Length: 190
Image 1: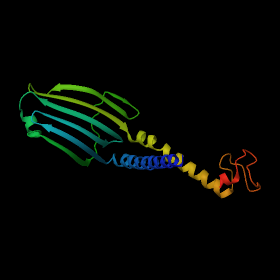
Image 2 (image 1 turned 180 degrees about the vertical axis):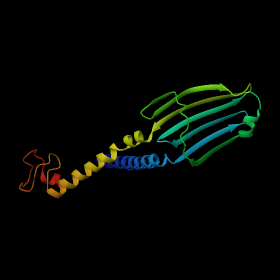
Image 3 (image 1 turned 135 degrees about the vertical axis):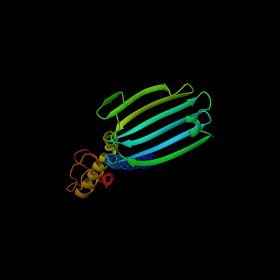
Image 4 (image 1 turned 120 degrees about the horizontal axis):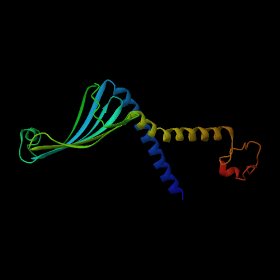
């Protein structure tokens, strides 16, 4: 039974640390996104098509964008990107600018552009999709675990410092062998 509590403790603390790191990263990227835009792009190219999946931090939100370019026969557009098979990751940063809002649905900083498909010319077909989530939402999602851990740690230090019962919080300084409130033994509280 003790090994389960140790495993739970390690999982809990790992989650708290990861959540705190994500919170700090979201807040940092939120501030940075108003003067610098960061983009992480993964592309997969083949002789007649190209797929791209990218994350963009810009203007207070994180955007997930998906693009697929398919050609029915070799064309200049696809050849410039995809002359051979390739998989690559690319990180870029550039000056932030207010881009025109291409999103169809927008509420409280959340953005959604549904799947769009269009022809560039008679040989090239493009499919795009994107969604945007504000940085504040990511920060709010990551904040509860560190706050709960901080509160639990404060309570534990207070209980140890003031000589209180670990179960009910009753003052045990005048008690001899048991907590008069809940009946827990003082040895179990030590």
